[in-house]
Image (tube, rainbow, N blue to C red; front, side, top):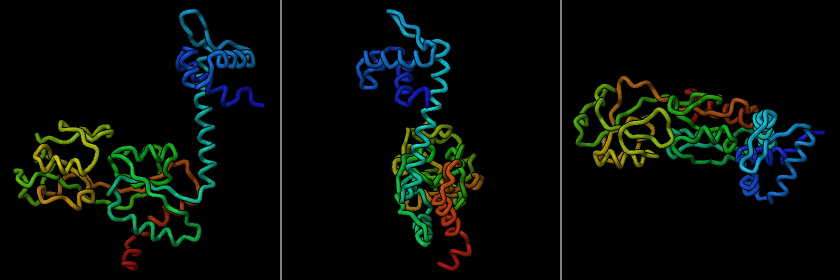
Length: 285
């Protein structure tokens, strides 16, 4: 029999985080006396004090600090186990991408996956500019279309589906607008955007959340941008898209949690890889 129930761990961790029984009780939506008695029962069962209580403050004992560290991991493990059990029994597969972020490949991937005898219903989720990896790590999505090297692939398995060059987006009247190509050095001194929620990709220009905002501000002459070519296939006539000759290529990758071994995920990945192979395109083109 477990010495502590998950609910008791939740009670303890709330008090450990707040170091105040009243605030912890409000956070848990229970009465303060009930919470105090629950903590006393936990201490009695473990045989050690977890908190030092005084009229002015509450603090953790060394035993309390140890339980806080390990208890948090234990609750996370229980949550992950429950989430994975639910996902294992689901009959649908969730794919996350940002709007327009599939390089035109998603319809072909879905068509190929539909031929799989065990294919699940596919649900499409649209994310913000930088949280697709969060969807995959916390289980809100099963697979996602990400752009490397912009998205953080740590902890994710992935397959490259498409590689493409990057283009500089400049106003139609910009000094570089008549060029056929540019180099990164040509953009030195230009105002670049700050992408909301994307660490390490920051410029001096206004913060933006999507390509639509970037194109609007480029049209107004407020900044320039550099993006994978497939993200600006429908650029307005007020801007010019110029290949950046010396920029490393951008890769569209299909990613999933590296700990996810479910057959439906593997089947979807295999269908995606088949759908972008040259032989498949020649046969179905």
